[in-house]
Image 1 (tube, rainbow, N blue to C red):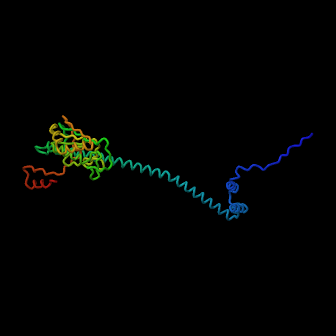
Image 2: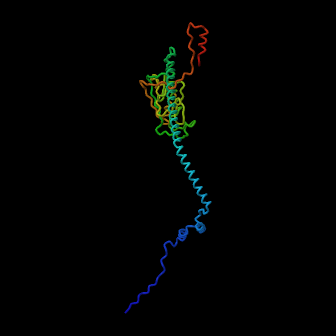
Image 3: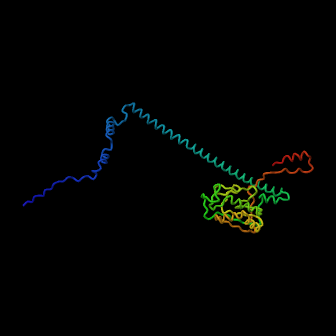
Length: 310
């Protein structure tokens, strides 16, 4: 008995995975616009856009030859001028090095001459000061000094900051931030002079009658030289009297109030010997003519007197 095969009906094919991406399929299948496609087909039919007449072909060939000639000439000129440019560069470098060496040599000469002038000025103060030559040299800062004295260290507070404040010390841009100011050092130095100091130096910067203590931002300048804390003040004089007189003075009390109110750190101690250097920038501003030697006529003496400068 034969078996009848089962009836198998064919169903619809499964949908394509990209059926929902019709726009993307259209772009992929028709990447070239129809107008561009027609123009490309027409150009291919006409011979690919290349010139077909002899005149057009000759013109194209002449243009290509001219372009190649321009490129070749430019490359040749660049190759020829390269050594010239390199040579000029080397000459410029040599000139810069030579001028730099000359400037350095002149700077060394100026520094040497400045030192010689300073030495001669100090020697003149020592030898031409008469009976008070040593005292004049000491007061002018022309010579190094050593002897008993005091050592005063003034430093910013531990938590000092450079911000603005509104406290009682605020004036001219300074605020009560625990930082030592130029006016604080001015009062300290003036108090030491008033208490009997014979010579004073701050951070090895010798002070004279022409010294100035100023500020530039948060930095303290002594004779236009910036100093950094802590500020070590050395003063020559009777150590015990100088220390007690300064602490009892108004400026000493001012320094103590800075410590109590703004945590500025201070420490003063008596020293058996302190050493102070000579002033680095001593300038003789006036001079008097040397007295005429005896035995010369009055005309010669007057001429010698007229040579004096001031």
